Image (cartoon, rainbow, N blue to C red; front, side, top):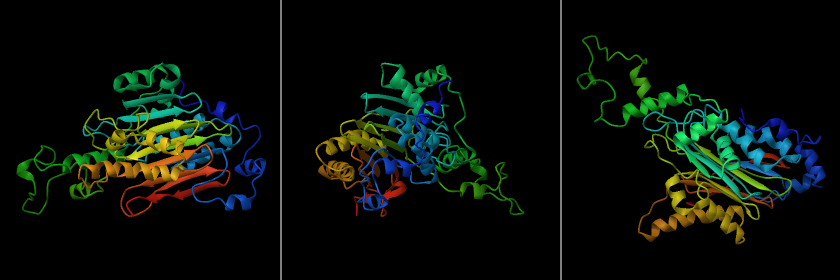
Length: 371
């Protein structure tokens, strides 16, 4: 079985270097040097980031850092880090535990791109496989194609020994059941029409096999179109990236977002940098956002500026047709010089991403272009 990448192959490249502090010394960096870095710049490589700001995002970066710092490849690092996030049952936007489509089926999308070889792979609408990012890597390395979809992607994964598994957790299943019963007053889900709101002479409502019906339906209405991006540059200056997602919750079966589309949800150029997108995929597809971000970096913009440019580009397209609409996107980016950035056009707060480099782990706060 080839799931996931061999940790021996990746972690065996440590050559006795076991901490970021040792790497910092090898690069001639002092604590004062690291403390003096401006926001959005580490000034050194290797480096790995993820759009995830939570404990799992931190754990994913820490899982791979020592080997990446010691000479491991960016491509291996992004795959292993993404695998950690895909297995988090509490994350309802990626991998295992991701929210399903309207039929209650979890369909996953992922893409990977290797800047060193200018190669890419993706899977879309794959079911019952926990690590779509690793399947995408096999598509990239073991076929002459870029994308496999649906049943074909699943059969491809099974042929390489990936186990077929139930991707729903009790939490995600309960969320889908709540959505199904609450989505419309005119469908046939929920209690029989003649018993809606009915109580017997003792004030008892409808028996519910799931326990307290009111509490069940009154639970949190989880809904997401989140995703994870993991981008890295290694000690040789090679870049790689992955985008992985369970897609928009309650989507029409078969819907594919931006995540598996090279140039939309992910783009990597070894001479420039890498970018990834989360948010409403339809608009990212139309704007070719990740390619646009990398193109802006090629023109001299920093990763932070390029992410903000991409959001304004989308806003301007709607403004051009007279629509005041912001779909809600978050972009992250790095370049090969150790700069990074993130931005979104959502709500009132600022976006946050996780960064790991010679200065250690930290959360970086980007820009909200609506403010």
